[in-house]
Length: 96
Length: 128
Image 1: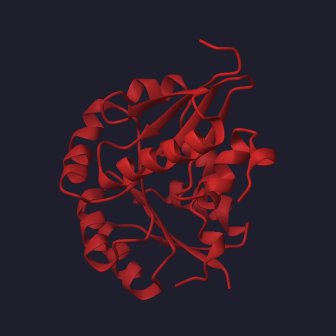
Image 2 (image 1 turned 180 degrees about the vertical axis):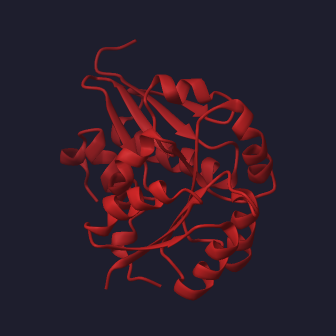
């Protein structure tokens, strides 16, 4: 993995339209902000509740930033671009 | 105007926890002790956010969620539940049915209620 790559996990509830929308919106934002410098996994909490507990995820949808450190958990507000960018410490690059 | 949050849970201590966490943070917390009461409270108060216990005597969480979605497809609803497979069976079925909701993990998520409420951006809205 290239240095500086963001390693992210998005925890969602099932394969609902809302979850698919959350994934698509996040991927669009990450493509724009990080280009190819990220690795995003999606965890369906219904299928893998243990992963949510293991990573101390207490609500959905949550975006977990594993790398670069520090680890951060971002409650992913729907269409809340600022919250996500702030959680990833990318707000400086946000051009609106 | 305060942002109105509806908490539906048959356990009084849980309702008090919500009131304690959110009540002092600019949220108006309305509580209901059963599913039936919760539906009536929803009709009366039209909250901007709902926290709903998955397991209650009488109408359970999924039945209440279905009633809320018949009234309002947009209001954010968080189902409060332990994160374990046996509890998720009915919730998975509800999701497959097309009912939209998110999850709060009990009891740990109860320590983060303000953060969750803020993430829904209901602070951007007036009580409806």
